[in-house]
Image (cartoon, rainbow, N blue to C red; front, side, top):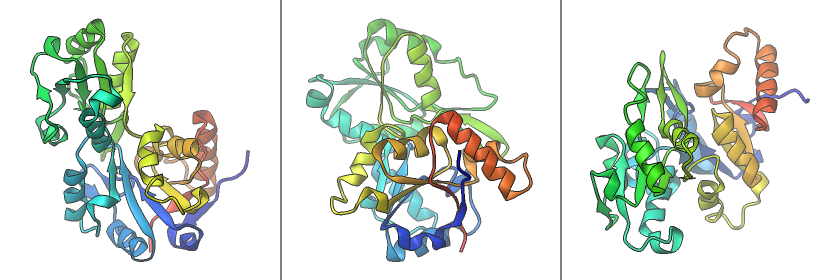
Length: 286
């Protein structure tokens, strides 16, 4: 096992042509931006191509609006979300899902309704009338995570198509956690259902970026994320480089150690456990 190195983003700026940033756990946690991160991202984007690759179960346009509100300079073309990937599946349901007339039951918060806007698909509030379950559900720590088990059981018993628009399982929110759609998708699978995942670590979301960059070698693309099972594993699968931040989901693997050497050793052990190896650990400061 090799020892991971800890590098500042600007020490590797010339090693890459394209930088892919995860959002939650890298740029923001809960409702709080990490200190200095907006200036760092904007500085990188002045000289390099930047994309935001997120498991947010939201449309590209909604996500662009939010990222811009943080003060980050971006365009809709720079935003790649698992929600938008799900939308594209539904828009092309005849060829992608072999369903000519999709009837969608959206299991998720009202705030996520932009994912179904302008799809020209029928929506239903009755799971027994649906042929597609679109999953964007989340529950915060302390809320009832079993509240929707009956709906999940109905989807499995009827063998309808289940689309998970956010493969994240758990994300940190300052002093608490949020159970994301990936957690409930796992429940579907445990019940015997099959799930189509549209985000990281599955390759489709990365391929949306790679197809935009036909002349860029994969080793000149860097994915920056906080989660082994999504950001790092997904980058490994498509053959691009990756760097793990010390914030977000990565924090729990090193926070009990005081020195950077011990932190890196613990992260290296965790990478082996998850079979998801970052090229290095990254510091996002100027």
